[in-house]
Image 1 (cartoon, rainbow, N blue to C red):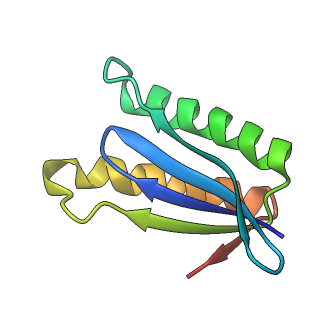
Image 2 (cartoon, one colour):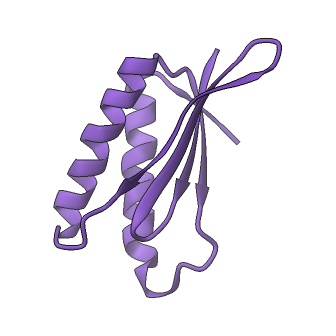
Length: 98
């Protein structure tokens, strides 16, 4: 079974894709740097397209999402990013784990 662990920050999204059968085997660990010059709509579209490719390429079945603790003034944009990722996971048939 293939999992993705997603950490959402104001300016980036870190992720770790791993397979777990009898033990954890890391497949890919990387991050998406969100361009500061993009408006929020373009940022969300950028994130969505990137994540769709990852989900399809690695056939991800389950996902964990974590949000940065110190949100500050950017809380609304992080909630929007979480919402887009949550909707994307649901549409792709990826089960979200808590």
